[in-house]
Amino acid sequence: MTVRLAAATTVAAVLTLGACGTTYIDASKTVPPTGDVVTTTFPPVAPDTPLPALLRDIETLMRHLDEQIVEEDHVPQTMTRIDQLWDVAEQQIRDRNPDDLFPFQQAIDLARSGADRRRPADASKGYKVLIAAIAAYPAG
Image (tube, rainbow, N blue to C red; front, side, top):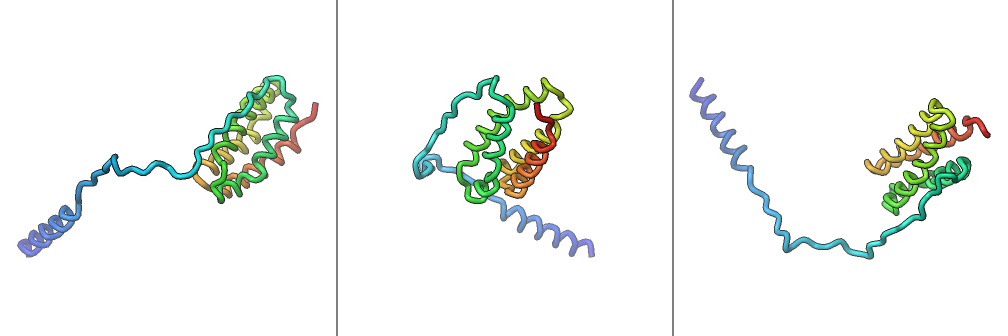
């Protein structure tokens, strides 16, 4: 019985290890990306931009982010602009009342998760959270 077990183990080891191989990447055969490479430069967001305008711009960008993720259409550029706008908006909300940040940050985090992980449902949920946060945020 032990001889059979030893033989079976040896055969399994040989088959398993025999399937392993070395992978080589020939850098000379690497193909550059096709199509036009477009770089987008956004104007800086002024620190004194009114908060309602910042939130409106973020909302506009997040409205169709889920569709952009599905279509793989300008997602990095959209997220870059959302992050730029959020940097200014976050500081203004923090200066007013840091306790108000949570729902907005949650919305931005869901948008990032959707973009980074290609999960349109996260982006869609982030948009809904953002709309609720804007509606609940005290004016003035």
